[in-house]
Image 1 (cartoon, one colour):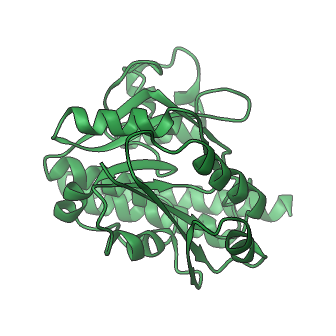
Image 2: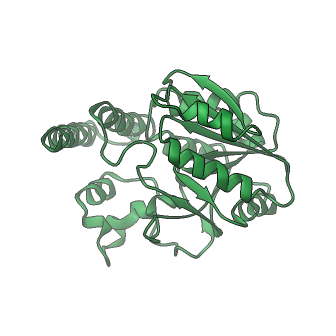
Length: 287
């Protein structure tokens, strides 16, 4: 199964170097691999570093067009059987790509595979396996109640706590930091929604995979490092905060609002607006 790896970069030169080095050192054993870096308007020397140190990598230089649009440039024209969307703040290990490709090949109805993502401290990045959020679960997650040990299922639901971190299985969604997709499924489902500039596009895509009849699968036999916030910044800039909350509203409006009452919808949108206001205030104070 031929593999195309797409890495979208915007700065984070040192992290991208580590990511590309890990791909060079740990390619899949039974697949041809091509790596493409789409540089989305890096303000530093990131693209020059790629060109200088990784001549085997294809480099596309673009402006800051956003995560979805940058990935779509390659998804639109790729002829590989499988495509991997990989964040520049990740590193693959020996066997990571093989485990993902093996799972993809095991079941022709699996359209997307995510692997076990670990943070720098060795803890699970819980976003690597998720459920589609309900209003209650989203509120619990963002207030921290749903992230507490022993939180009730209705409160911790967003983190797919019914599936153990070392237990392979179907999940609603995986993290956009590592999304291994069958190109046949991509052709049917369609490209990433460019209405999301940054954030939530991965959740949207997973939802559309399921709607089109393709499974999304969590495969913990593959492990990768994810430096949380490494490519977008530990603290979101105001533009990123706005994009994140607009993405939340767009996702809810597309998939959930039609099935809920106007009163519930108004409460959800008001909650998103209030959370945005608080986030922007915190950002301003911490500057």
